[in-house]
Length: 101
Image 1: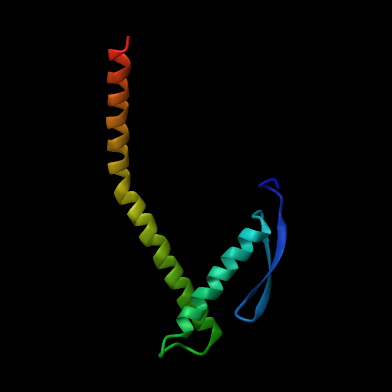
Image 2: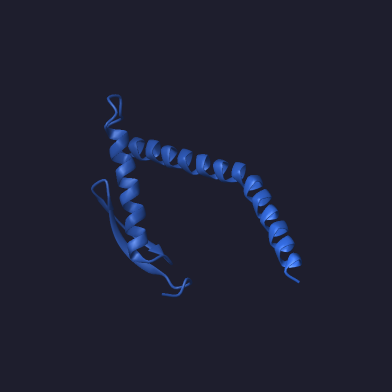
């Protein structure tokens, strides 16, 4: 399916059905909704969890956001190492090519 077309996918999160309009495939939207549902259930298992669904959703959103920024930070901290390795490989390839001519 083209990226710019829009699908409407019905998903259920925490007992409510939402019509999600997205250019993503319905399977992807359902996967994301299942992740949100799981994170909300994780919040609810805490002994001190709020009973209000909105508060549960906000705490789940904060947890998901924390995961996102942790991953983003980890990616940025490893990038210089990856670039250095690529640079070393380029030099090695150049040396091998030069010795074969």
